[in-house]
Image 1 (cartoon, helix red, strand yellow):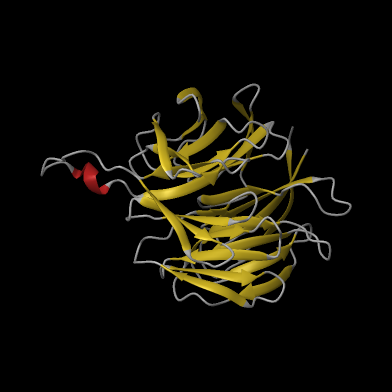
Image 2: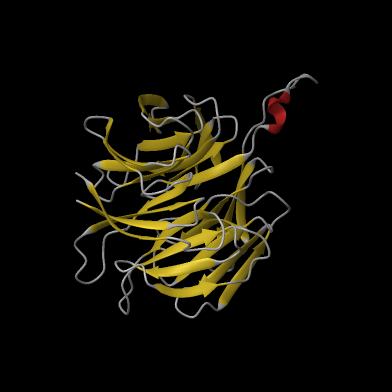
Length: 321
């Protein structure tokens, strides 16, 4: 397995690019890359040429996260303005605007069947689940705060939820917090199953293996990428190599590799059989906020693709084989 740089767009945005996600292909068009930036815009790019398709405005502060619906028809962007904007990918028509209190909108992801949008609730210490038919809140999954903190204990405010990930079957939802804990929920019962230990610094990114719904990967400011058995509540392994915070982790569609982006300015590819980094890409000259593998599907699409975005305002595209 290897990555080969295909193309980089310098100054893809006018400010730091914090978010990237792939919009799946539809019958009418191939997949598109979605990027979100502190310049308050969301941009759509063609998958192989990185040609700009469109620039979406509509947020009054920087875009913190983007997510695409599995149908490829709609997508969502969340912003530091506390709004989530849901829009039609091809027309940019606004479908819904979801409002939250300040600092309660961070990472988000659509459930694999597309019926629910999960939004990491930041300082609310919860994850909100929005029904994608009515755009009303279905339920709020609350994270238990530490019991009876002492006045000197600062951990009570640390249950700040940064990241979310759905299992491939949609039965489990994991969320990562500022204090390094990861909570796993049974979504149907809105029940906290357990907390996964292993990090002691913010968990900014999570992803389940696409081939094994038990396996969850987490990236943390402690520099480690951890591999958990999300059902058995065990830490399967911990991979190190980055020299600074791990800001993003994504799993390859074949389940054989993960990619990570870090504030050490690199993108790394990890072989899961070896549990080691097999390649380091240094395209960016500032921290890499997001990495995203293109999902399989679409006519004539055989090649794997990985995208990365950075504080350096650039977007990079790699071939994955």
